[in-house]
Image (cartoon, rainbow over all chains, first blue to last red):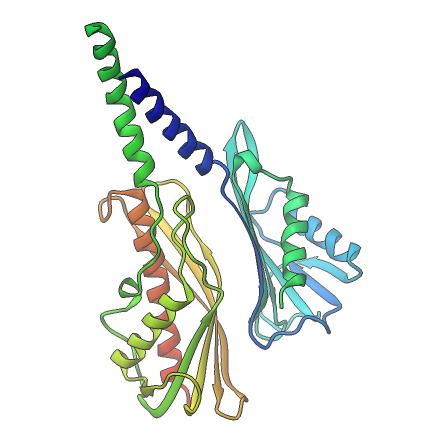
Length: 144
Length: 181
């Protein structure tokens, strides 16, 4: 009986640990989209973002050799080669951490999505917001 | 020995619901049936043929959240076109008058809560047979499912995800029906 109990607890622990380690990191280009001519980005500030993700995205893009600026959302067209929007999802586990980040690069004339990237890390494999931004942008620019 | 058995039974009462809760949390993928609407808001039924494709979808893992696969979304889209008759015929492969490509851009899903609201964005592109773009638009959709509608969280999330996709297809087809093709 005790052996059975131990094995049940073992399976539960395994399930819990697997559930706590879920990761996802993706990047994809919309068919026909080409980011090679994009040099100047307009990052749309999300009013609910209190963690400065817009600044992190801008810093990363500048580090990659692009020009970038942050501004408010408005009706297109935007004065840039492409628009960047993002969705961040935070969760509490001892401390707040960034659970999921999705970044979308859009056509500045009609907001049509050109490319998107997503990074999802649960608590046990959590990354800093800067690392998440880095991971998503790398995946977007590596996408074909 | 009896005491040990009793203790084990007591623990079993704790473990069983835990196991159930864990299993209930296992994600199942969005089904194509759940993404097909009962009614469509169609203005013009085009007497043209179309071929369809989807990109950006993903397969569902048991420990993740419900995802929409390219195959299931395409199947739902084909059945929705057939049902709404926004195009007269859906052809597989090449040779159709128009090519409809849908890119699933993002699906925002909640983690906890009684009411699950799922937001979806997809890029819709309709091309003529010569490859020129006839229409292109990003379509956003939202669907909400309450705990009274669906008690089990994993099912509630799947149903909300299917609802957001269904709404996206409805909006996309409604917009296409208003085009002058």
